[in-house]
Image (cartoon, rainbow, N blue to C red):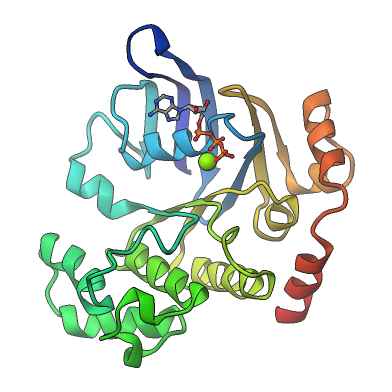
Length: 260
Ligand SMILES: Nc1ncnc2c1ncn2[C@@H]1O[C@H](COP(=O)(O)OP(=O)(O)OP(=O)(O)O)[C@@H](O)[C@H]1O
Ligand SMILES: [Mg+2]
């Protein structure tokens, strides 16, 4: 069964004469436990797709289902527990005046979890930080550690799906490999499903079994990782995109190989 099913998703954004169609009949499907890549040029609508699935935009047309339930029939709190987002910038996405403890326990309190204390220290260990980070502020952490906190926060409500929007592109290349491997481990341990946006095809190659290529708000082509790597793309735009990144970030590929 699909864990994420998007059918004919369309969305307009902007005010007055500036209003225009941003997404145009997007369809994609991600199997439970899979990691699915979303690629395409800047402005093609990748983040907007994630925002629609996360429930941050609500005026789209079409259908979005997760875990067999449509967005229209789901309650907001329940949806938010199942789908969480991780953003590119760990600096911007954590409240600077809140300690890690507050950042992680607040969602648990809002959603009525018991056993908050144990859950917070468990998640810190799961993301490789450990309890000693609990009473620090975000500015007392490195970029990689901050991204681990952002991942912990995304996981704290025990979601089934993570929407990852360029989750490593703000990080140093050696840290990128560490964080990507953490994502791979967590997906296995916690039975997660990923929808991952990256402009870096080495990242997609390492993380995803299937992907969709977007351009100007539409899906141009859907293909498997094997097709991407072994010249099986049929659309001209996909091939241009692949050629443009043929020099694949060699440094990152080597780091990934060394770290796994
Ligand atoms: N709130 C908004 N109002 C109007 N237009 C918007 C809004 N948000 C995004 N857009 C436009 O929607 C289009 C898609 O944006 P989106 O952020 O989804 O692209 P993207 O594929 O994630 O790009 P990037 O790779 O640069 O992150 C862009 O042309 C953008 O300018
Ligand atoms: Mg984006």
